[in-house]
Amino acid sequence: MIKKISVADLIPGMYIHDLNCGWMDHPFLTNSFAVEDEEKVAKIRAQGIRELYIDTERGLDVAHAPTREEVQAELQQRMVDIATRQPEKPRQTALAEEAPRARKLHTEANRIVRHLLSDIRLGAQIELDKVEPLVETMVDSIFANQNALLPLAGLKQHDSYTFEHSVSVCALMVAFSRGLELPRETIREIALGALLHDVGKARVPEAILNKPARLTEAEFTQMKNHVVQSIILLQHTEGVSPTALQVAGQHHERYDGSGYPNGLLGDGISLYGQMAAIVDVYDAISSDRVYHKGMPPSEALKKLLEWSSHHFEPRLVHNFIRAIGIYPTGSLVRLESGRLAVVREQNEHDLLHPVVQVIYHGGQHHYLPPETVDLARSQDRVVGHEDFSKWNIDPRPWLSP
Image 1: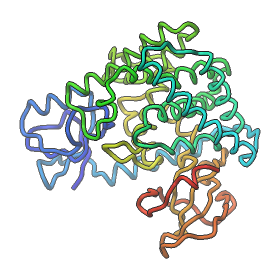
Image 2 (image 1 turned 180 degrees about the horizontal axis):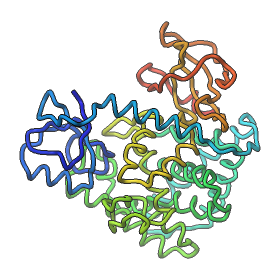
Image 3 (image 1 turned 90 degrees about the vertical axis):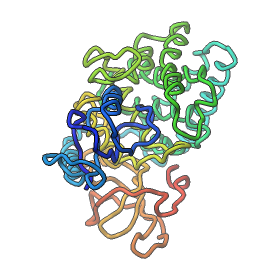
């Protein structure tokens, strides 16, 4: 049986099923292993891990610990509660009108950031005049209709993850900031910091960045240094605001003080740094990497909600979920009818019932003629998330409206 326990209850003789943290947040070879001694327990605690999952059939038990199924049921109910408190937002531009611009913008953004990181690796300085117009256009697109650009965040190539992740984090941070009703100028500065938050990775050896396996402890330490390198680069770039610097410099800090590089605690982390930490983890754990498969977006949101007990400020996690929906645009969902559908738009007054495009019949295992269904006006409903790869569905044609 799989159970969730506090790290305080971890003792030798237990078998860890899941460390319950991001793949880049620990130095262990795998997420599952036996705990042989107190040294291993101390090492796990030193990573800032607060809760994890054990397999009681392969190791010692904790009688009072909840099962994985109980945890999932409780998280699902919390997600529903968050969705029903969705605030009203204006919709300015039809999806069909914004989608072509978003596609071109996404391609251009990836190209610019790729060249930016390549230039930094060769010793060049950051040229803000090449980046700021892109940021302004991304802000415009999200404000016009975020359902056009956000799904494209799911389109990443393994060998292009670093710069595509930066573009995704930028788009998600704008949507998050808009949901918090922050001033437009502040949102622009946040977006700039988000787009540049990983520029320090240009000073990490490519062999480490693209290693198709777990990093060694020494490599893990070198990888974590990318945040310090980002800070140095941005501090030497004229025109980078304190807000943008906070986004880049604090996106690996954690609310309980377990993050890096400075181990900041609670409100010692700026609002923008706390937001960036949430978005960075969400995009990382929902993306395929060379050494692990990303989880479906809805499952990634549940993980954020679970980790908000320690690593993230809970109200901000709730706001992020409301900003992108409990079934994020571009995700694959299973309907009560047995059909599979791609979430096309959020119903901003009713996040439990998005607008979807039905594409496949899960029971009969065949494609269906694409059909757009507003679930707020249909008897069908979402009963769970799905993984494109499970059904051998290529997501690319469906994530670009």
